[in-house]
Image 1 (cartoon, helix red, strand yellow):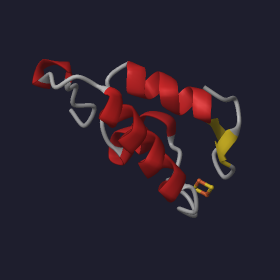
Image 2 (image 1 turned 90 degrees about the vertical axis):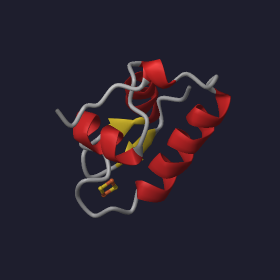
Image 3 (image 1 turned 45 degrees about the horizontal axis):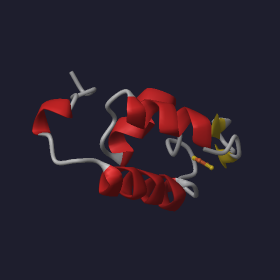
Image 4 (image 1 turned 135 degrees about the vertical axis):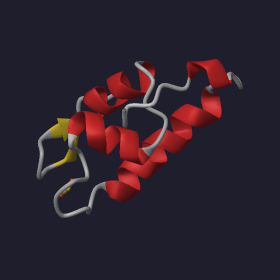
Length: 71
Ligand code: FES
């Protein structure tokens, strides 16, 4: 994973998003909640969406791995 900056507004890197995904984030909303990426101007949301989709596509099907960060 790259250390490149994904969200300039909130200074969130690709590494931080990757780390959130590895800890159980499963949606762009989860990433926003955990890292604050995408919570200002929203220009980075397309990149966050694609990082989430890429990560989820590589995961085996296991609903037990879903962690709800909204509670
Ligand atoms: S660049 Fe991410 S919210 Fe503005």
